[in-house]
Length: 132
Image 1: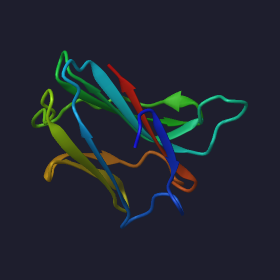
Image 2: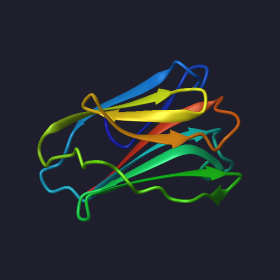
Image 3: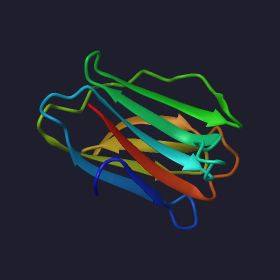
């Protein structure tokens, strides 16, 4: 897929479903964003509900996660046991949807859990934005 990418997840996210994203880290990376959004927004505006936004920042080796409900962003989570992304190397991110959380793996290793903050994950879209 070309970046930026936006695609619909048929039936939305629900327990038992997963999203897999495969890529290669740029040779001079800065950051990239990945989001699971709910709904389409209005008049070209972004959706007001974001089930999970993931921001990978290379300079400070952080992976930020947050959600947005009815246009209001919640607390940002930062803690991860390791930073799995290496310049110039491929990676595979898997986001597993469970009843109460998303469980995120990178290259087969569990990276973090993110508790659901939205009550409905129907009409979910996947958005990938490359910000070198």
